[in-house]
Length: 338
Image (cartoon, rainbow, N blue to C red; front, side, top):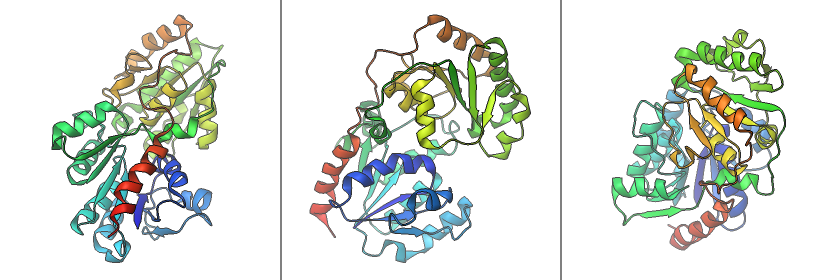
């Protein structure tokens, strides 16, 4: 029996294609760690068997302590799958490792090689590479990162990123709008400067609609008054967010996943970070913008180029990752049941 763990919306978006692929082919249970508790009501209720360990307390310290102490969560489990780089993913992986249960790491091998950027995600994903038995990498570069760390004899597979499986069949279009998202911890200390720079762009480009779904984190939300000329909206559904990515002229974001979705939909994205763990698209689809005062020249360059759909291959996969993962799980889980 495979135990699949997640607790945040980004994790769910990337794990859902895997669940669809393995349904009826690989026996599994879900461990829901509960950070984004609305997922239970919005997506999971009456759909999957969910072990929700948060009990209404979604603080990470409570989740981690609960994981390390609840043996019954792992009864009858042969393998554990975790995704990405959240602290809960690391905690689940650590709990499984201490019970000698093989860990399968989805979206393995992403690196910035800077433990503070992003913090604590860079530590979490590096630590998971140390304890995982099976590594499902989105790109060849990610595979090479793991090989450099633990050797090439390990079970390391390049599958592409599962998030792209959600985008198959979508075609890019161009409307007079710019999608903006901003939420990362690394930007909290100067979020006012970022918001002012974004608002200045909206003032200077009145022909474009700047749309910013406002993150509920208080460190972001409290500075919404800086965005007087930006269309600030409530957090979007995933479907609506994809539609904006598909149809916008460009994207301004500090998100990791949007870099992948933008590349698949042939859009340029300004990454408001000093470093990215998705270096494969930098220079083609992604433009690094480490400081607010760099935003205007980069944005102006994209708009003035009048090239809003990029005719290049997406470096993060082709939308078949979940099917590839299904075949790997058949070999590694179903044929080696404990």
